[in-house]
Length: 273
Image 1 (spheres, one colour):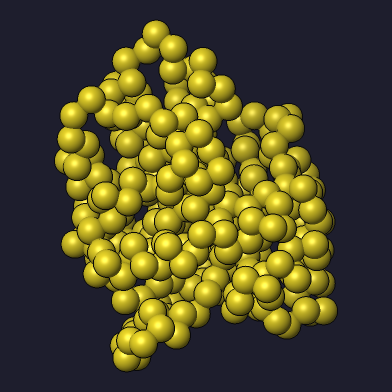
Image 2 (tube, one colour):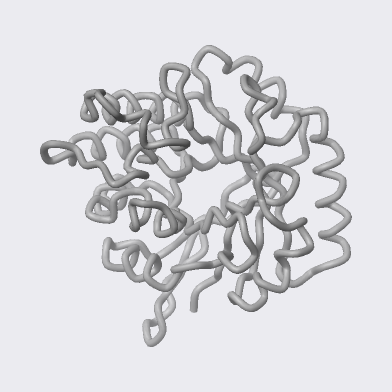
């Protein structure tokens, strides 16, 4: 069986199109055991339309806590997706540390002060290989910071379908090795299917590299609409199984647990916590 979770959900607290309660029925229909909310926090550019005002954080957590008392199926988890800036680690830590959260997703949306996912024009006239390498380096800094539990869409610069000019496997090797060293998980993010890329993050050709380094994984939808909760998960599970994975992460109170997963017809595999 598969213990289905989706920890990357955006609500109307940031740029999602429904309030938290609006996702619960969709989560049930997707067969989820746990539904995790992770609205955007960006401590540098807090006035952006897609990020939550940081002054609303306690209202956010209180609202989700109350919702979790009302609904027990699926189990509701409270998280955040926090933008990483390598010159703001102290500020990010001071913001996160006092909060009662189940997990924190770390993300990189900005490179050298510019958004990498808002407009394809960002890439015009630039050296894409250099952008790709610099982005991976910053992702690795985020993973090394100790601030986060999961790194999200770890090769987001693929969003508009641009490709590295040669085999980038060494960059994924570097990323996976860094994640393993710092004991941080990554996600298979299915929302790339809704972008010009038309594929998952990270590049599915390299999932076996993360498995080789025993990097923990979870499958997330990055849903901004209820109808996208759990979207494309069956394919993601199959790809992970083909790469050699037999367990996935769950989270509670910033602690990670590993749950075995098996596709239909496969025997149970003992997991570890």
